Image (cartoon, rainbow, N blue to C red; front, side):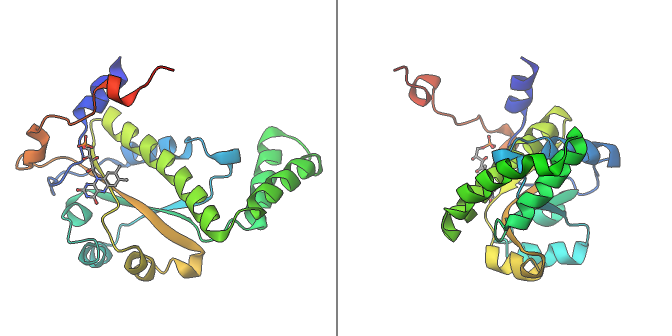
Length: 209
Ligand SMILES: Cc1cc2nc3c(=O)[nH]c(=O)nc-3n(C[C@H](O)[C@H](O)[C@H](O)COP(=O)(O)O)c2cc1C
C-alpha cells in the first residue's frame, strides 16, 4: 500500500534545510487535508494559525524549548482549540450545514438542541480535552498529507502553552494552543532520518478478543 511507504518514509524531523521552501500549492493541499479531517459532530472546534512572521517564530522558539524546527522549517502551523464550546459555535456549524446541504436551518433545530445538551453536560475541563482530541485527528491528516507530498514534518507538543498563547494573543481570539506542526525539507545533517523506526510489534499493539 502506497500509504504505508509514505508512513515509513516520514519521521519527526529535527533539523530542516533552511533554503528549501514548500510551494504555495503544496501548502494549500496540506491545508485541505487538515480541513477534511473528521471531527466530533463535524463541529471543527479549532483553528490553525499559519505563522509567517519570522521574528515571531524566533520568539516562539524561545518558549518552545529552543527546538530548532520552530524556526528552521519552511512553514509552521499552530493548532488551537476554542477556549470554550460556546453554543454560538454550534449555531455557526448548523448555519453552514444548512447552506451547504440546501436545507432550512430551522429543520436542524432539534439536532442543535441535542448537541448543545451533550456539550453543556461536560465540565470546562472535559470540553477542553474533547476539543483538543479533535485537533490531533486534524494534525494526523496534516502529517499524512506532508508525507504523501514528500514533505518532512514535525508534530510538536514540547512548548510552553501559556507562553505561546500570550505571544499569539490567543485569549483575545477565544483560542488555546494545542499542538504545532513544523513542515519543510529535512537537512542532510539530521541524523534522526537514519534511525530505524521504534514501534511495538503488531501482536503487542493488537489483541484479539
Ligand atoms: C503529539 C506529539 C508531540 C510531539 N512533540 C515533539 C516535540 O516537541 N519535539 C520533538 O522533537 N518530537 C516530538 N514528537 C515526535 C515524537 O517523538 C515521534 O513522533 C516519535 O518518537 C516517533 O518517531 P517518528 O515520528 O520519527 O516515527 C511529538 C509527536 C507527537 C505525535
